[in-house]
Image (cartoon, rainbow, N blue to C red):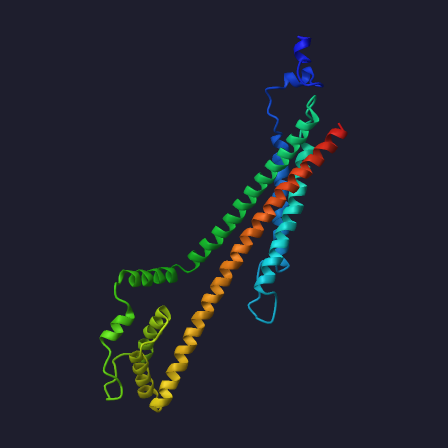
Length: 290
């Protein structure tokens, strides 16, 4: 029997054989470290939101720009992961049970694994809490205005279900023009809106639409035909320019979201590494003070 106990790796005692069937994971220490890391993350995220790392000022001459916001948010995420993962991993390493008779290399591996698992559990907890908070806010928004949502949904469904656009219907019942005194029925503002929508969607304005709008403006306002044509040209140009700005802002938002996703992944990788190293350090100090 003695030969069997000492036939393996040097330094393995009968105590390690007796506990060979026991899991090497100290789950109480892992859970404790994960809660410490999750709590620290929530505190730091709230602090970052209070310091302005989670919002951009709507005023162009105040606050930070979108690029600066992305960089500042990325740095704060890395700092948050660094601190929370370090605390969680260290707590898990110090609180785990002592592995008697285990080789030092195996102890180092187990400690780093404890830190990694602690980081993973904490990350899942924070993700669940953040997801629940966002879902609650979205649900509250829907409950706050059920009538508006219902009306908006009906409008969208009616638009989608109709195979003919309002612009096409407007052209169908369009009069010959205002120059001959036959004014088109209906509000001229309502007739101008589909023309602008069609111009934005197609990127161009047909000449007959320009002439029709000029006739409507001249008849409605009483100004000269040349002034009406100039006013129509300016209105159409401003509308197309506004649409271009909206698309540019949407593209900037897409790029910012992509960069934020990359920075978030980098911060999480740093957090995993820091948690593993901190757990190994905490486990080493644990073994030095039995």
